[in-house]
Length: 232
Image 1: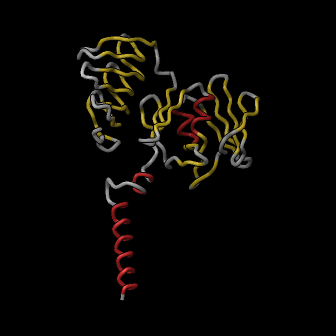
Image 2: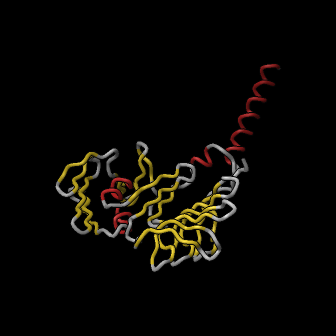
Image 3: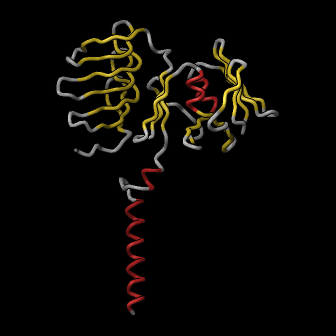
């Protein structure tokens, strides 16, 4: 009887644990399975298949990343060859091959391109950096931020109408591109701007130093992407 009781209790504990993991807002597998988001100059990258991670590297659909960075891309099915071109830069990759060719020079890859569900995926950081962009990975929010530099006109620091201090990219004297503003109470926003307004994905840091990622539409918060911050 004692063995049977312990067995039933073990089943109860296991069932409770699985329920907690699967509940919205629960820790563990539910959070680990949250999708990876990729932004280019504050705009979320539109992809017909989701990004995937291999050996710690994020791969995205080739056409989405190349075209978002202003490059032309071609695909040769017979040789499984990918060619991306922008200006004088030519990047050549092959499915399954752990090296690429950039302007005639062979460069090693941490992870090779691959095909998933009929779509060709390429390593995000490698493509972006070889096209002159900067890449930042936010592991807490599973967010890849790419700054191409094409939205930039000049860098500067100005005071916004609400009294906050802005530092970042400017166009015609207004925040445009990527930048950060800090208010007198310590609250700050770091992310995408367009014509003086928050527009795109950014991170809002509260005075208590907790942070939350959201999407803004012409200065108005459209939605939160990350869960509510936990007070410290």
